[in-house]
Image (cartoon, rainbow, N blue to C red):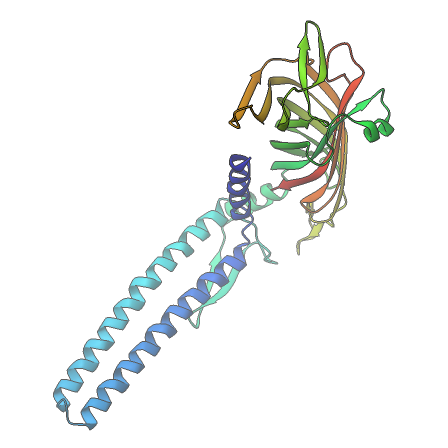
Length: 353
């Protein structure tokens, strides 16, 4: 689980770094240069004040004071040049990223952008090719996203939700985790609210048995039996690869540029997705933990298919606002062979651009 959370954190960091807005980044660089200049000037003033104090006390001569002031001025000027040059490199890279269409822009005009750095005004002019690249980026119909979801996992019997009340599995302790990558494609050429969302996910489904029970394989049948020892852990985990597909309605407000062109602004408002998935199991394991008669903690890992169906398919849906939403999945085929038990998952979902 720790590895999953670290991976999600890494993915989130990457996704956030891709959401830069050109003007905001320029302002950050401008503030950094202003801050560097002010800091060095303030330090120089402090040093000059100290030198003047020594001169008044006759601890140094006038010529020594002049030399010290010149030395301090040269030093802090060099510090400004050194530290500001790094910010200038960042600005150059930012402009290149803007030209390459790697970052977004809120500018009203595509042909130029004006900003201030350290009190000086700068203007960036974009060529016709740059403008064409920007317009092409605007018309992109497909976007990519990382998906992370987590929640509770359980079993429904005979397609009755009421069977959850009598489930043999702990409701709040049985969890699922999903990590995946999706593509989101607008169905029409022109801006609309309808998208087809599809991708690849890996799921970790956990079922923790109630009443000191564990899974036992008896030929073609898998049953829950009471363990002879007092179990502190009884968890059945099955990992699967899944291919989700959803019809998504994204009600985000579109953006209109000064040239009259209207483009999509996805994942900024209410979103509703309905669809399904199909996939197959990658592996199943049962984890047991208990103390034996000698008081020694015993941990068992049992690897078996536990008569689970290798392939699975089902329905799924989500309701989200921006990148966070509620998520539900229901398997249409039985979890275990020759049974009427089906997996159901409820949780939260994060779609990260």
